[in-house]
Image (cartoon, rainbow, N blue to C red):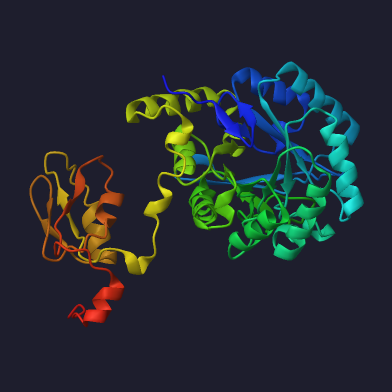
Length: 422
């Protein structure tokens, strides 16, 4: 059986599944139940100067009959007294010494406040610190959270303050509310951080109530931009993760992947693109702590199937496959093929291709049903028909190269080869 044990900056855990800093990790009761369910570690909900939260705090986007495709929150850092949090962290470490205990921090804007908070947290026996440079609401108005993560120079300065005092491993959590996460990632590494985590939530409005005319979540007739997370943000998180994994400077440190991880498959994708472990929040808030059982079993079975013995055997394996558009092989060509035995004659492929793509599907009217076939000479291999088809493997893409050699756009231009004549 595959070995799922993880070692992140020397912090060991029985598996790579951590709970992200969020409501599920804001108290001892939750964290102990999470550890009992099998989670490898937690990042305790962000500590700092105690705040007051509002009501309501959450909203969601549903799609296609599925609840909470995207999740939005306007909750701030921990609103519980610091001394209670510290006491409970120490107790959780005592009861589950084999699990990773990371504490998220967001101190007030001074070197002294950061040093004071770090000393208090390190006394709990926690295993690491995560710097919250990502909260996109509430704290930004105070010059904290994303206000730090959006300015590489400030981020570097704060990391340097932290590294003056910290004796534990330090992870810096990056905000996605920037054009690129790389500049702040580089600045954090230059400041001395031991690792990076990403992404934090994306500033958003999930929708407007058509009766009250107030966006959600509703707070006494008003609302604010919130932090968006859940399955909907996964593609954005994977892109930003990959840019960090590819950059020569930021790739020198381990990465903890966050953003829409709901299943073991999601976790594997994050790790293939450079994450050494993953953090989960929204999926747990929707389904409960026991989803980690399926995550563990699924990753274990997949690793056995692929012949991977340890996590290091596949971490980052997909990163080299991400290239620049102008380096892609123009001679690689595919065309669609419809399996008539599997086709249910719904016509979705034809509608999509005829109305919005390349008019590459023949429609033959019939009785009792219509049939569809591919015009191979017209098919550009865009993949749209396959994506909209409701039947698994009914439409497949078959390789029909335009030439044996590898040919990219730069070389195509250099040779002065002809473009499309339509």
